[in-house]
Length: 158
Image (cartoon, rainbow, N blue to C red; front, side, top):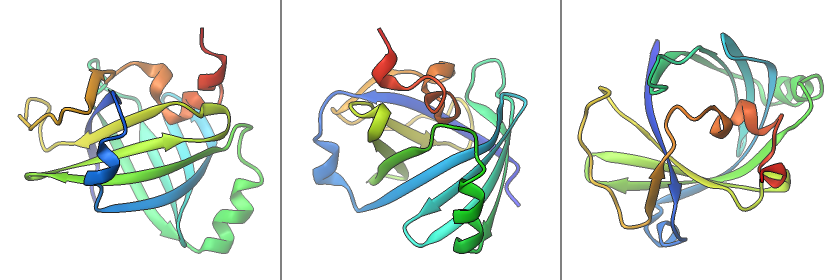
């Protein structure tokens, strides 16, 4: 069981990542709990479903506890009905660059226009190649967390 997630987040400059994508999948997700100390997420990714529990991030916002388990698709559909308001809808594009895989999320609905790349690392100071389409780093900026996007969607930002 993986208990620690180390992740950095970046905005995207342009759509060039789509040409480099090796896989794309549709994701729908909601939150049974969105408090920072413990988020509980229900996610449907294509035809698979998961429940994920995440703890609070460290001071830099790059590392936190994470536990995930696959659940039956029908259970996830029922759980989404009782989630907090603000379901997240997005397409995730996987882009392999050397030894690293960027997960680029293009959001729809109330978060349309927002595109964020996430990169999981083995340590917070691990080096990685930065593609030309990678923009400003937003690691640790809470407004970019999916659990916050459901409460304060991108369309309402100034």
